[in-house]
Length: 85
Image 1 (cartoon, rainbow, N blue to C red):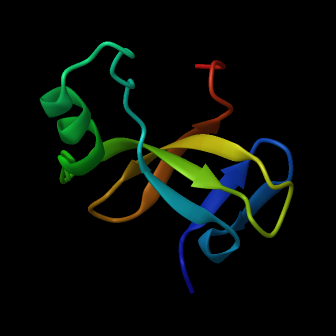
Image 2: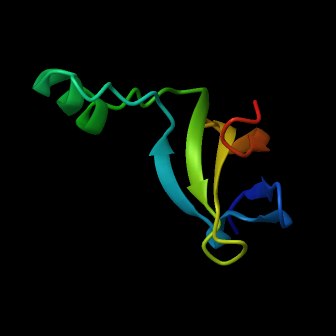
């Protein structure tokens, strides 16, 4: 069994209902250099600890949400819609 995520719309669900979307980071501006875009796309922090991540509730409400998850033990401290921090 996976860990649990709290969907702001559907409630607490098993992580297998979701699709991991990667680290949530600020996108570069349109006028960013190729290196800035390459770093954004390919260079992940891969932290051992608390990380802000995208998750898609594929078997539920079909919405993207943000989760704050500790990558060491998969404990999720907070979930919310983008812009509701």
